[in-house]
Length: 167
Image (cartoon, rainbow, N blue to C red; front, side, top):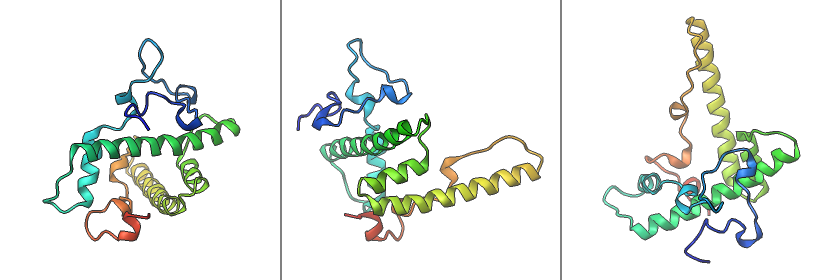
């Protein structure tokens, strides 16, 4: 494994083509995607890592960078599988159910079950919010994904170790 994770998209024979998935991908003139353009922002990764640790804990830059590479690769792996499913079904949009299917197919059943429950609660909340807006005469769609029910594995108080660390 090299330090240039993300430069070679065909690493380990996975052959992901993110541009073919319908989205536009910013890249250099030579067509290679820059590493920082395909990784999650390190500040966000660090913030998520801190949520599970005691308040006085510190995280090294190396740990944040390692986690940044791992979660970015994990997201690409799962999304690539879901995208392949959508492509075979001649659909252009990957939805939450596709991601849940992908997680289960790839052997992440524990994550898939938690995500299915979260997705169900999120959709219930969105339905209720839409109904309330229509009843109040407000025809604007007010969707705020941040106000949805927080997944149990991200809750910082009373974290169940089996949920937070399924491995």
